Every structure is written in structure tokens, then in C-alpha cells.
Length: 313
Image (cartoon, rainbow, N blue to C red; front, side, top):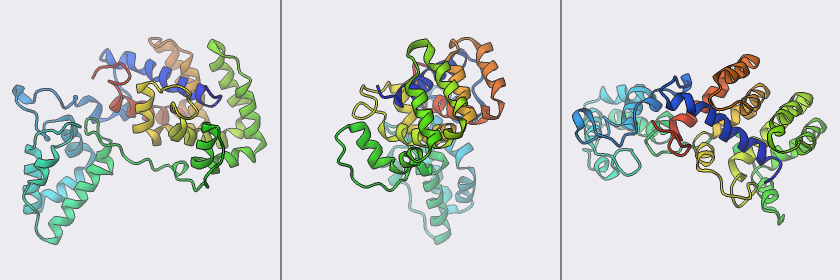
């Protein structure tokens, strides 16, 4: 496993495991987990044990009550768009947990420019806006962090990991390569021992070479998103828990990579036992400015990846 993959995957798997233990036992989730994480799976019985419809599902409840409230209200104010909402609410669920596509297509068309505009705004919110982040809907919102939108030429590199970085993350790679502090940080991490001694060594490298962390963090954020799989830098299949987070929570993870304090918080918590709440809390108290960013990542993971990570909702 490459030098850059090992520490990041350790953080993704172990820090989430630490969060899952209290969450799955009924303890409080991070505030950023939001309504979606507590609304249920969307696959069980509805009220009174009847068939679940879009409106009574976890997906529909999150979209209508939380993620797309303003768009729903605007649509409901137009009679034609309101009829579309009523029809959509009654649709059964499709295999991905969202409203059945055939049922939605059969809903009455909306007439008038105002109603059509309101309907499209709601559809856009569901498909690619905040509603796409609702747990249970089966949507994967497009990652928006600039690290994921680099302009790179084709590479003749034969090493698949290097080729991936050359073709997807060339700008962040070059920025780190051109910065001696970033290169010193990379060298420090490469020299860390394995096993239990790795996390404290990694965290110490971050602190000893803090001036190079910003460019390093952007480099890792891009590589994590594009290159950590069994064909590139991972050299082995990703655990479904990690794969799910990379797929659903790319922006939240990138935000933590960009913040030295968040990286130090996660490096600290990886050293805690999963049920050692005192240890986890002590890490948060050491890096208080990073707690919100850290919890945003965990909240996204808890909302989308509990089944993949061995937890239950």
C-alpha cells in the first residue's frame, strides 16, 4: 500500500469505527448528521405498517422537510406544481430508495411557466442539490471541491498510482513538489514505522512540518477521491465503508484534509479505542476549532454509510 494511502485509510476506517460505537448504541450522532440519519432506512413499513410511499420514506421526508423546503413551498404555491407534488408523494419507492421513476413520469404535467419553473427547481434540488445528499435516496451528489476539477494532460507513466495522480491530480502534485516544506512532510511520513507507532508519528510529522501541510492536504484530498482503489494507489480492494465515504462524502473529507487542525484531530482519535469516549473527547478538546469540520465528515458518513461500515440505523 502506498505511503499516501495508508494513513488516510486508517483515519477513514478507525475514526468512523470510533464514532459508530456510541451512535449504534443509541447515543447522540454528530449534529451535522441531520434529519436524514435519524429518519429510518426507507425500506420498512410506513405508518401503521402500510406500504411505504415516497413521502413517508426516509428519502422523501428528508427532501421535503429539510433539504428542499423552499423549493417545495414554491411548488406547492402553484396549483399544477402542487398536484405534481401530491402525485410524487404517493409514489412507491424504486430500488434505490427514491420515488419510483415510472410513477413520477406518470404524474400529471405541470402547465404554465411559473409552475414549470418551480417544478424544475424542486427536481434540481432533489437530483443534484441538497436533496441529493439525503440518506436513502440513492443519489450521489457531484463533488464540488476545486481539487476535483484539475486540468491534466495524458500520462505515459506505467505505475498506475503515479498515472492516476498525473492525469487527475497534476496541479496539486506539482504544488507540493514545488514546495520544500511539503516535500519534507512527505519524507517524514514515508519514514514513519508501521503498526501502532504509525499514527503518533504521522501526527508529529504534521506538526513538525506545518508549513507544508496546506499543499500536502490538497494533494491527498485529490488522490483520495480519484486514486484510492484496487487499480491504483490502494493495491487492494477498498473496504466498503471507505469506498462509501469516498463516494458520498468527498467534499466533507476534502474540507478536513485542507485543515491541519482537523487532520491532527483525526490522527489523535485513530489512536483511541472505539469505545473510549474520554479519549475521543480529549482529542476534540486539544483541537477544538476542527470539531465542526470533523463532525461534518462523520455526519455524512453516518448518514450514508452505516450499512457498509457495519452499523445499523
